Length: 257
Length: 168
Image: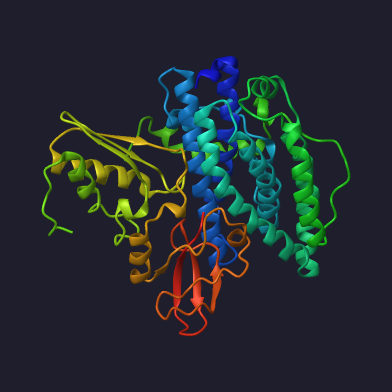
């Protein structure tokens, strides 16, 4: 981990928290859908996805906590931070109003995350590279499954097509943030810790365009993009999610089983 | 497994013990069959074992670590340290030939191809063989099964449903 010194510790920790919080929040979202799947097979898929994300989040949070060196654990970081200390992108905290939203959110994020993890396997932070090498296989499997659903819903009935197009139109404005670099992203790419987010865009565009075309869905026009999640400025939805996720440790500090 | 007589060399003995530690989800497989034991250093004072997690979120990881620690401590009588080894990542290619045979006998079809195969990712002409009648005329029912590592299949000849250990 000698190359790690090239990135200021505070920025490095925040960079890891961005990755960890994306996985943690999405894992929590999908975990909350267990028992609400449209069919048994999808129920299993949702639970499996959630498990993979939470597993990745645990490794990333542990790594961040260790680097931070303040004696905190992965659990402290997951359960005792407030919303403004979370660094996930806005996309993953958007609500799961119906199955189309769940699938589109998953598709837009995993198609990005898969490219991001692939790049992170080359990270100068060797621990991060190891976590990414395992994660990329899992997320590749998710993406394959999610793409199939986008196609099935988009090229399905008039009703499913309409609903999934609406989800796409609604969630599209949260995709800009994925590729926008701020000072933390730039520090990471200069130190070889992570990729320049913009460099992931061409591969993402290719996956999005090919899948949407097969799904007979229309890619939303270029538009104003929302952002701020990576810097800790969140939509109202994150607060509700954390209230649920952190309840036990807030109500009974230090509780274990 | 209990019938194997203990060997004196602590290193060989440690491996022998690990051969008896079952995977909690698929108890016919030992942790050695599964290919997650990366190294064993049995020394005079203590023992260190490197274990690779299967899936990052696999709930069995902690149970496996606890079981390995307990078994080695009991048999070797020395403190045991477990290292979680992430690199190179575990894939289904690490399952041993003995492990693959045990999976089939247990009714779970072992991974059909190497984890790096593109063909398997896109599920084209996989030829997963039914563990009961060996027919390769099989259909995938669900990409996700009873545990994170399995998919659900059915046999088109004997009509039995079965689990398939997917290549990841």
